[in-house]
Length: 147
Image 1 (spheres, rainbow, N blue to C red):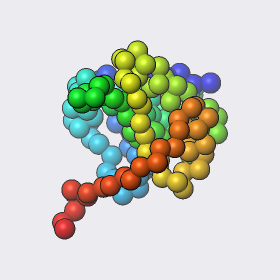
Image 2 (cartoon, rainbow, N blue to C red):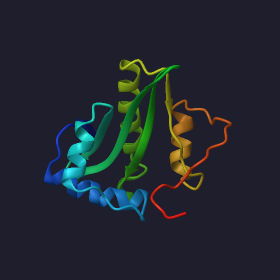
Image 3 (spheres, rainbow, N blue to C red):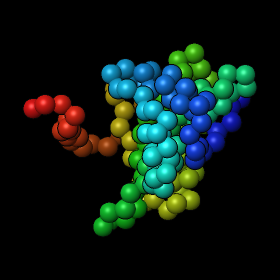
């Protein structure tokens, strides 16, 4: 059983948890420090949820990001990750359902996400939750590297 909560202030527990979670999602990315987390949490467009498990502390997280464009309010799921030893126990689903509920309450007309095809279990979860695979071209320009 897990409890899901929205985090609004950085704590040492959160900094340590994010430092454990980020490498399991994106090994080449450096986890944010406390000051960076504070800036993230101050941004009202970003809702960071964590999953806590009895005795294990924070075992997962997801970011829900809102943005407004001329066609309406949109939301995105970013950085859903569950510690490897806690996968398959419904943690990711609980995090996703919490984010989906908030997106509905905030009147987003769509909730988007992208997922690497190699993340088989995550992709199965998204389909189970009602997400549809969208036929589109996704383009990316890396801005953190020299051309």
